[in-house]
Image (spheres, rainbow, N blue to C red):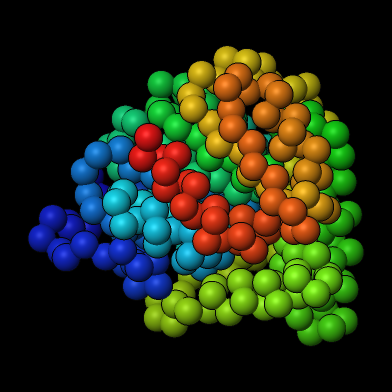
Length: 288
């Protein structure tokens, strides 16, 4: 059981004030935040490369948390979670399974973005009985074309960002044009709305290990995703430079009866640029 008894607390539906909690399992202490009404199947959020709990857009989480129990967590070795980041996506999925079962959930919905979407796929392939519904955004399948190039793109954009003293996500997640630039700034501002109890930043070594794991995933033989029978919603922008948009179409072809949304004039962070539209779609999909 979690070491934080929460039965009599008022329901919090704002990620900006969601309490920070921890649970220890499998030799690591996992940092997580939870919000929304308890009971029913929780929605577990799987975050992206280099990200911690502070990287979720409140405009995506809050609408979902109005009606659902939401859990966001740091993978092993990331942010305030202890231990070492594993060097494979499959091992990250094992850690996620350890965390989820430590919270005594036997059925979850998954909301994932980017690296989180890769971990989510590995989790579903290994533990299909655990997952009821799957949201895969800004991500691609194992063995997907050019996934192994993510590291190069990431380092290049980190350099570009450093030279202009901006956040790398402004380059990596958004188009550098008249619609993308203001959307990027608005997104970065939203991530700063939480002021108290911020998460620890990711360490350089943890980030490098995540990149290695992504490269390995990109160069591995594909999983048989035809086995995924869970209702699946796939979304991305039409110009994703990190995890190319064609990989979302590839996932859509491989996962039977999946739904695909590609947002126009947007990049890797398309769901954040179009957060109003996408949050409504995600809420409806998860409630169905």
